[in-house]
Length: 106
Figure (cartoon, rainbow, N blue to C red):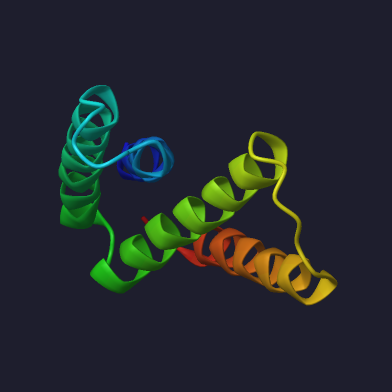
């Protein structure tokens, strides 16, 4: 259950981070609401996962999911471009997240 909550926390982080891209001062309220709720749910799920998982592992996986997810959304949705070195770096983050999951006893 802790790993499931960690994945949910990562997804909520992605949603909240993408919502930040749509904030235009204070004229648009929905991105601020989505961001606030998203980060709130993300932190809650992360904190619940940390009850079972080591804090360092949980935090590393959470930030990895967020980094990879926001980058993927940027690539697909916002048509952002990445250099080869950035893609390789994101792949290394993914490998680290997978490695932490495979070697975790929880």
